[in-house]
Image 1 (cartoon, rainbow, N blue to C red):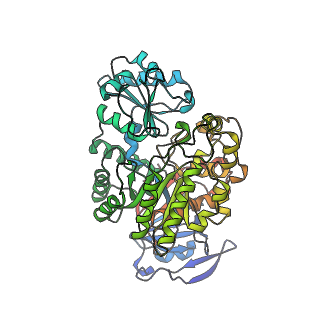
Image 2: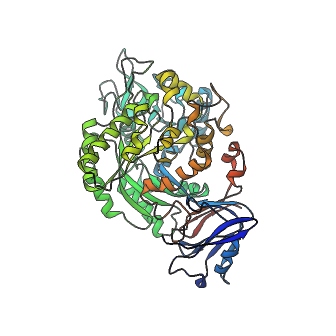
Image 3: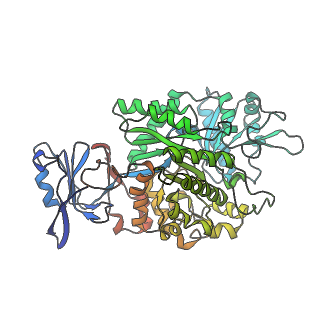
Length: 579
């Protein structure tokens, strides 16, 4: 992008005045001018400004408030920021809008089992015609490592099916009636033994009511209350509006698991065609079924069909391992509480290696759920082998979550140009993390938890994404909450009290505000393949912006999560404005 820079003294500071790109002359005037603000551009050469102009869908000026006056015409909407912060719209690098359907029903995010049961009962009483009693957000800390039991639900609901989704969406708690209607009994096979299964009573092999991982969950859901495309897309559309209100202007859809991917993408495109889509979406094919041995062809089929301005599909999402709460995270060392286990892979390592190789061969991006340190290493190994075979490929690769990262693999993110994608808000010292330390051992957790700063210091790229609705402790999608935790590694006051340690170790993994903002904008845009269009405020880039009530640089980190989003703009259109 060619730019010329003039220097002007404003309020004792020298700020750059950037001339408009060709074809967007000031004589054309702007649709919007934002002035008198703390403009943070995410452009390293000119990180700060006072004003921007928006003409059509693009940014036509970045610079001083005085310089912006030339873009004001009789139809220009002038917004005086009065010192408020303006920055690029937040880019979500890993989230699941269509899983909003799983969050319906009772809100079960509580640390007390009696409260969870009471909320479930209250929801049932308020919805007497519901065919299935639903809820979302129960925490693993409520139960032992053998998980929840159907007996607790049977006492309250002997005759009506109950399906309660866990806080990470990777398991469910059901009652006997639900198991009966789904046809799950002692003789029924597990969909993926050791990986996705129905927890069993060791005495008689009867299912206990804990349904582990997505294949088993989907099997039960399909029998009890199969989601329709209409219901899934309606729930997603409502959530997308909430995302916009949080300042999100673009997102990477990490998997449409409840309905066929194509139907979910059609729902997004319908919103786009109606002018109601408030965010850009780059979607993936969610590969979680080992019976599908060539997922790359699935991605190619989606890519051919979905490639509009706001809705694109072009990435292979790989569900490589699971989570430590279910003992399905693939770890280098055995689990402390199960010394005979290091976790199981959702997909066979050879299948994953072959898929990454084929993706690299044809220039397709991959994005792998790799939570345990062994899963991270094996995914990096697969990428390295693929890059050696096809070194000129434009493929981009992302390791997602990376809750645990071994020392020897820190520098490989830079070496292999693999993006570390993680959900920073999970790095809180909440009860879930204390339980993880007991399951895996403090020697592993206190050394390997969420090593964002280590990868950045080694020159690697970091992208933040909340993975909503999946969570450790509380389902969070607001970028400002994730940014605060990335900086403090302390629990958010609105989600609980301080637990076993004030700051989640390792203490030196906290990152700076500027690092967190870049990971939430420009480097997250890289994961979407859109960094040339969005992620920073630059003349000629798309007008995706967010306005905050305060300059985050001027407030304590502890206040970032409660800072209000005043305005969100995507593609030159205001999609949210606070009252």
